[in-house]
Structure formats: C-alpha cells, structure tokens
Length: 114
Length: 112
Image (tube, rainbow over all chains, first blue to last red; front, side):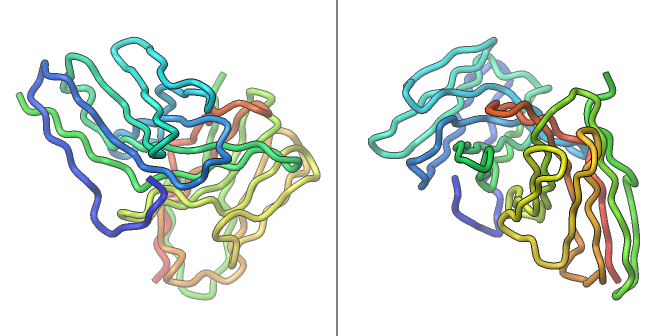
C-alpha cells in the first residue's frame, strides 16, 4: 500500500465475477482509509472510505474491509463490469493540527475480461 | 459546479524554464493540494494548504513553490524546471476533515 515500486500490480477478472483488490499500509495513525479509482487520462475519483474504528463498510457494489491487526485493507467489487477497468489506489488519511495528511499506495490495475 | 479545474492540460518546457500550473475550485473547500504521479509510484504530495494564507510542504516539495491568496486558487510554480519534474500533476481539494479528495483532470508536464 505505501511501499514504492516500479511495477504496477495487475488483476484480471472475468466480467461478472467479483474482484478483490488488496492494500497493505504502514501508518497506524490513519483516521480514514480511502479507495480511489483512476481511469486512463483522468484524475482519481473517490469510491468509498472507512473510518479507522470500523472493519467493514458497504457501498453500491463495493465493500471495503479493514483489518487493523495485520494492517490490511481490501476493496471488493461485486459483479465486475467493463467500466470497472481502471487503476485503484488505497490511501490513508490522518488529521493533525495542520490539517489532513493523505498517503497513497502505488495502485493496482484492474482489467475486466469479456 | 465545475469542481477542480487545472490548466494547462499539457506543457513542454526546456530545462531551466519557469512556469505556473493553475488550479481553481468552486466548492469552497478549505483544503487544497498538489500531487505528482509517476509510473508505478502512486501519488506523491508536493504541497498543501488548509486555507488562504496557509501552506505547507508535502513529501516532495523541492523545486516547487505554492501560494494561497484566495480560497479558490492554489497555483504551483516551477522556478527552474528540471527533467526530473517530468510528470503528471494533479490538484485536489476537500472540506476540512473529509477523506474525499476531489481531483482535477491533471496536467502533463514534459521537461526536455
């Protein structure tokens, strides 16, 4: 999640299947964890967030799971569609006296196969 | 609302030239920030601001200046461009305390 790498992890799933995108984080001080979706040539777009005192949150076709014990975050996409093909970033956010501090992971490229 | 607007979308500079990337938001957000995105590196924070007149450095601030004279605008200045600053730059804003960043469409900068 917050590690740095030259190669973008890739996940390929069949259309209609469920997708699970994983993220490991190192900063336990994060108040929120957030998932963003970035389509080619566009800016990242907010998908869903979860407070650090929660372990699960559901949205429309998406579920975020947070395991603080192993510092792991996952995004589950139900019934994956071609429009879900994008790069997905996890981010941690914590607040201090100076405002918010966001730290992004390197991203995972999701490819949806017909 | 237009959201977050960045200009220009594309720019080519020669080493040593200066330029300003513009960012404007019309959502009355207190928090604004600049990120650069390089292949396989995710988004790295350059500078951020929590309100007019208040700015602070992020993870990779060297070679960049910012100012926040109004709530709406947060320009990013490159004083003397270097090839290492070739990247895609994103401006983002949010309400204070929110985890939902609103991003612009990006500015692709190439320094020769």
